[in-house]
Length: 138
Image (cartoon, rainbow, N blue to C red; front, side):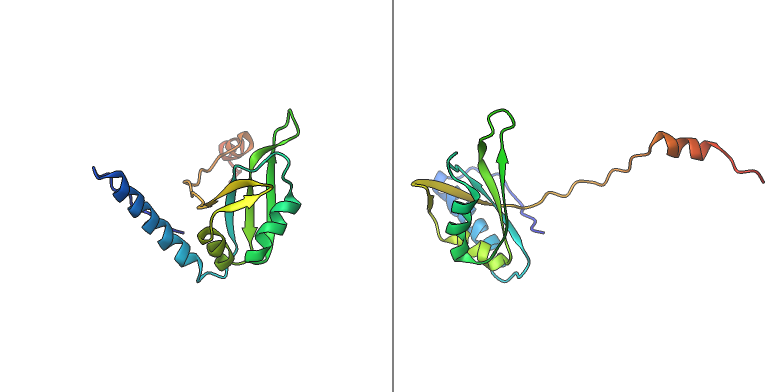
């Protein structure tokens, strides 16, 4: 889990870009030492591009665990983005560092997937409430 602290400052646009690139490089370099699976999001995918083209292109960086494409229920076409899970984090880091990526003649972008952990909520059902209300005989 990566925690990134962001401080809002008034600086020139070039300085902000430099800072963002350094943060991104730090995350990517920590991935290169990881042997756990790492997921990336692919955006700007053409509607004619399928899993086969994505797998063929990104398999040069390492073994792929899964590719998930997200489809529109009304049109049946995919929505222009996908998730790609590499077997190893170093493969994902290599794919992130070697840009740009062009699939089917169009440039696609990669974004690192960082899961957000929300607070665990405990829900009770009506059956649970009734069970608490009924007292066992003594």
